Image (cartoon, rainbow, N blue to C red; front, side, top):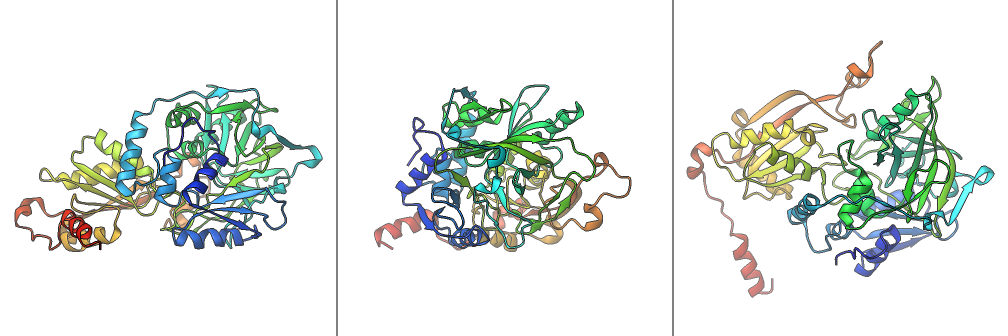
Length: 489
């Protein structure tokens, strides 16, 4: 099933498509406090259906949460506009082809939209009018923003940025937005603050999957995610101007918080976290670091849906496809590495992650080592990486058992393992020791960053005696498919 580009591009339309696929389960009466998170994880463990929660404890019917939306390849294929039925590398290759062929399409401004059907402000304003979940047992609070798009506009260039940053409820009119240093949304905020001005901001909490996916992608600062979302869909995203600041918000969004981030002064920023993150651990609690939004108004459509994308312990991923490896594959080819037949990751979030596998059709001595070094040096491969494995093209990079088999039988550790020290990494890596994680006295963020060593593992058959390497004692897939069909196995 392929999404109809002429159908209404919103989350409620996507929910209807999941219903048609038989990929949606309705759950009534669950508790926002831990229970929704536990149900989400238990169903994700089994790669079960998407979940639509309604009649949530303490909330009226119609204030809903959607989770596990992209957990399977079939559902993620529908979200990507590629339809159901493609899996693993096949789905990744289709996504790469689509994203390469994509031509950006600017959003179109409309006078009105469903997102403006209802409004809360003044004394009626309360962020917890919506069932923000406590996703994990030891989270520091309720996170209304996980599958969200944070909308900012650069005050100098006028460019709009969409970024997915976790958003924790801090009060009836306050939400912390974890925009890490260097993120495009934070850069816009810093420009406003440098002028002595608060930063206007909006948070879309539930939108068309293509808009959410565009906000997750790592794109250059001069590329606007609304344009990417339009290009991938093949039709412009409809936007309306927010009533207070004139920010471009999705006309068919579910819930949008609008407000501003005031100037940051000592003691003005509260505690944020901990929060269960994509690596499978609770990320540190921070105080005085995470920007705080003062919410001035909330807009929402009738029967709104919060898009819940809580990170979970791998192999539970809120997206079935490691989209970051598509960028790594592109960057490897751009670096001149030939013969790449597959790229995959097994622990990932919005980045490629710390365990990456690349398959190649070996063409010359040193080909495998070149691939490993190039992967470590690319932007996509450097940030958050740790282990990089290269295997022959007969190994299924999406099958961890196949990868471990190749590592166990084709790799001579003394000859085929290298360590590269001090490579740029993500602060989400739990293995960064405290003395390297925390800034020293007088140290500035300009001189403080996070690094991690890399292990490069050549698990290819040695090229110098490739023709003498023992043959694999398994039938070709074509032969197994033939007898399976003949004998109805």
